Length: 132
Image (cartoon, rainbow, N blue to C red; front, side):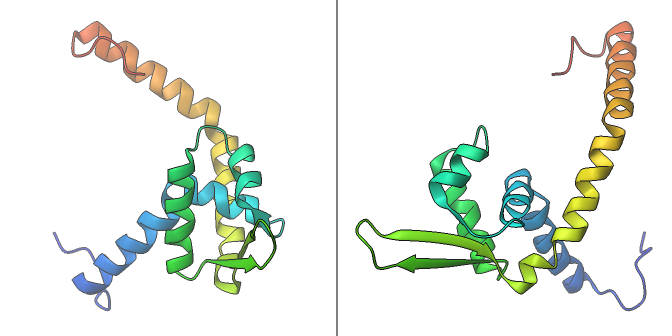
């Protein structure tokens, strides 16, 4: 089962998987979209992203910073002001993330219908009670 292109080795696959895991998680995508409009402060992002905990926002921003996608700037004020913004590498993600978001919006109804059909078939077959 090696349908990989000849120039793609298993070590490359692992690296690609790590990158996709970072940029493919729901919080990272939302943060990239938020920062597409320019720098934002931590609490501003927390208010704008419904359902994210302070800890998860911190961990996600730290991961994006480590991967070179986000830059953190601390200003020596009292209290300290911290801004987050996309790096040039992070800005290069705007177009693919935007395209993915557009695809999701365009296909939301079809996906909802497919899920409802699947759930109905499974319930009729007695395989499940109901998926959330």
